[in-house]
View (cartoon, rainbow, N blue to C red):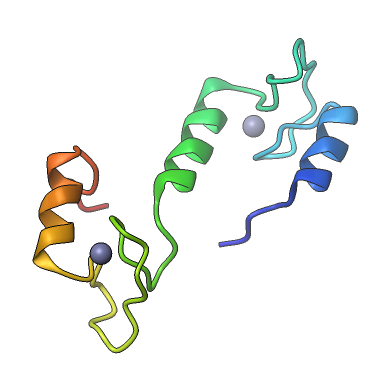
Length: 90
Ligand SMILES: [Zn+2]
Ligand SMILES: [Zn+2]
């Protein structure tokens, strides 16, 4: 996964390109950076997902744990699930 930095997003916006799929479009506001709602939703969903190898609740390193581990402890898992995040597996 490659996240782009703010300078790159600014450049895309200036050129009228979607921040996600690079489709040319006409931004109407500064916040308008995606060509479609779909692109915005996809990007937001990605931003929500914690980086691989880190607890989804507290951000602690998951080094040495199973590759599909998403939380450092049961407490964090339950906290995350109670918060409504991470209840669905992709
Ligand atoms: Zn797009
Ligand atoms: Zn944790």
